[in-house]
Length: 190
Image (cartoon, rainbow, N blue to C red):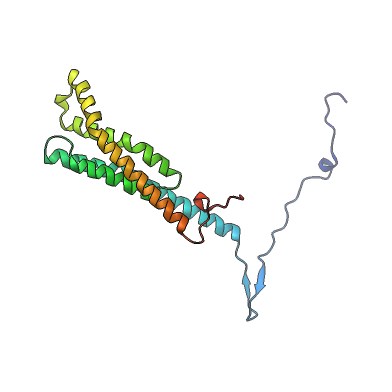
């Protein structure tokens, strides 16, 4: 018997047949009419799918606001005169605030930490694209230092705006009656 497998009683029973389909259950209404019982699992799956699609849409809108509004402000500043100015600053602060208002609970961290990077890349990108001949060789290093120094106050304002919006959203979420304490509407029990 070396090398042979022992057979179990379950293997001798033959192949498993599928269970027959169970007909839809019906309940009696007050009038005596039978109505089908709705499958709660299907309803929950549909609701979960709709929530996931809404989160994706909100995340996309938040990303567009965080990047698009500062970019539009920077382009408007460059078209209005040399350098990045007040329109870019307003666009960066407004874009970060809108993104913080639209994002999910977990996305709040990303909005606040990405704001300085978005501001710096947008400011330097708009300035470089509008004056490419100015930034070659040593001019690129000097320009990069100027971009960081010039964009730093806007970075701080954008982060502050994002944090203010997040604090306001958190306070308002906790004051809402009937809302679960845990993020995402889940209870702490599981």
